[in-house]
Image 1 (tube, helix red, strand yellow):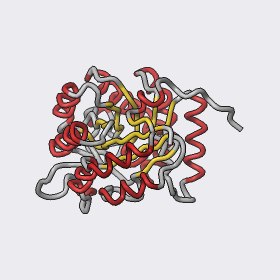
Image 2 (tube, rainbow, N blue to C red; image 1 turned 90 degrees about the vertical axis):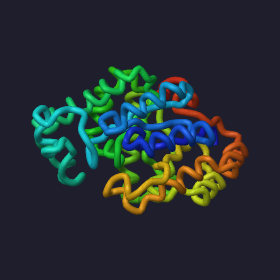
Image 3 (cartoon, helix red, strand yellow; image 1 turned 30 degrees about the vertical axis):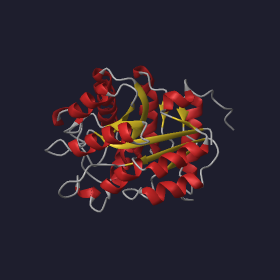
Image 4 (cartoon, rainbow, N blue to C red; image 1 turned 120 degrees about the vertical axis):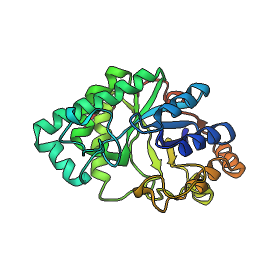
Amino acid sequence: MRGLIVTADDFGLHERVNAAVARAYRDGVLTCASLMVGASAAHDAVKIARKLPDLRVGLHIVLTDGAASLPRWSIPDLVDSRGNFAGSMFWNGMRFHFLQRVRRQLAIEIHAQFRAFAATGLELDHVNVHKHFHLHPTVLALILDIGPQFGMRAMRLPREMHGSFFLAPWVAWMRRRLDRAGIAYNDRVAGISATGRMDETALLALLADAPEGVLEIYSHPATEGPGPLTPSMRGYRHADELAALCSPRVARAIESTGAMHGGFADIFGHARTPEPVT
């Protein structure tokens, strides 16, 4: 294994998430966090990140199951009366593809999220999308058009270590698009099939079976608290994931791989040279 990136998603979603990111970075193996710029605790997350200058922070674009950055009047076809993204991913994916007015609103929302990240003054380490919605051709095309204007040089490729056969063609297509654009990406990712359950046992098993190339492991740590952080996170074991990131056994397992351990910027340094596309 050439490189290992350990990321916490949903930075800014809640103060409990933010506290977990800080602890997992200071006392554990966390190297990256992906920021939800429109979430309620985003301002608190930015303050924490500024105190941890070596923590690599990226943009976690939210286009479903969360709050938009723009007011409802500017993107009325995307959000409900509370400013949250409405509708299922399948239905919205159809609308993104077929309805020009929806695509226009999608573009300005994605641009607004990049602009909001830039306004934090943090260096943009990477970009990924909530629920991996960047596998959608329209979403990815817009990100590849807008992101480089804000210094985007790396993205998460959701190619799981033991991924599904169904997603393989979409992942291969995305890889070709990233290569054409000269955007760096991980070779494999771990965290999709075990979402909410990335505990110590899961991390140790992943590291024992670590593939060649660059692996990104992501999870959703949070400190203890009452109830789920969101309805869709019911059943997530946030505290177990935080404990895993702070586990000495996990730290020793990472060290034993001999891989470079850091953020996308540390491992790639610059955008990957595009490969020939066949």
